[in-house]
Length: 552
Image (cartoon, rainbow, N blue to C red):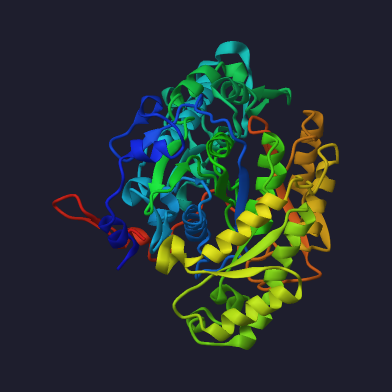
């Protein structure tokens, strides 16, 4: 059966029953029907549970299944008597209708209601989009009416509009054409909602007041004297925060096995910080003994940002890192063609192991114990799996099979036991890769060399100009959120395995002062993706009874 067929065959529990597992009463929920609810930000428990971070080796076009492992691991931990909750990101419609499909897990390891979560869910993305575009409208209105005496320079506006769809034709455009009543002509463009600063702020804010304060600090552009203009100068923060009054509250749903899942926020990890909201993570930690969360793409992207940005801001730390590996990904990084990944090839698996090793080493850089989860696919052979287990053992790392896709939570209780034991034995905290008082160049170099394995870092002319502006604005002490391809440890998506002796070039640096970080952009990364030649949207349909098919 397809994922959606499996999801539709499971009768979900009423959301009140799921909330009871977190000791949250029905009266404290804001219901969105029978199976979804919002948890008010005042919802807090008495515990400070252990945090488990799920990340992965360098992803491939075949997919690695971090979300599937995260969901299955949480189910498995409840199987062995460890009270556990999930904290995950919300899916973006870009990948749903693009190439990756949905983001609710797979097989018998899913969160439900699957169609709702993958589509509009509770409207958080729409609210984020509208808050972002309200600010854009206020900026252009200020140019037109010249109110508040801001003297904005239309050539120096840094704020873009957003939409939750892959649409490359909107990346760069000219707006305001058609005469005096149509606005001031200027260059503009769109980013995808998941990469917006509003999304980043939502996922790092502590509460509504903090959200509003962060909005006021958004750098929208420069005036004609070269001085900064912020969203607060437009008095935009109150209206923007009002639009997110409900969106700031985490969403509560469930897995197929009834494990509570807090799903909130959805920044991508290659062009944004790649983790769910800090509010949802800390809430889950206060309501459960263990919280399983996931960071996007490989440890060089989502996990690095989870630790150096989110954990630093929230003063939290994972007690264990679960590194997802697949036989298919190892063979791909062993230079096997995509079409041949289902053929047994133990030698290719061994050739791909250096990539996994690099990601395991990243866990050691942060000082957090790491366990490998081999997300098993039906084409994997015992010999291939054993080769990974043996290699991990030889470098002092535990590795376990995870058959969650096929068997749900009972498909990996051994992994769950190991994770729980490791989490209980770890009482320290992670060590950041860089100090905030280092220069921006030093921070980028630290991540590039310690996490990617680069030998050098260079800054293009535009990036150097951005560095001068950052210094002038007094923002050099912010953490960094590097935009880089997910397909390689380097900034070249074609370099598989564990490349060495490569350089990283920073093309430009965006300023996200409201979010509280800087965004060095490397290689050819775009913050508005495009659709593939054959998008997933072409296979999605709905019948006369409202039944959706084609979601995966």
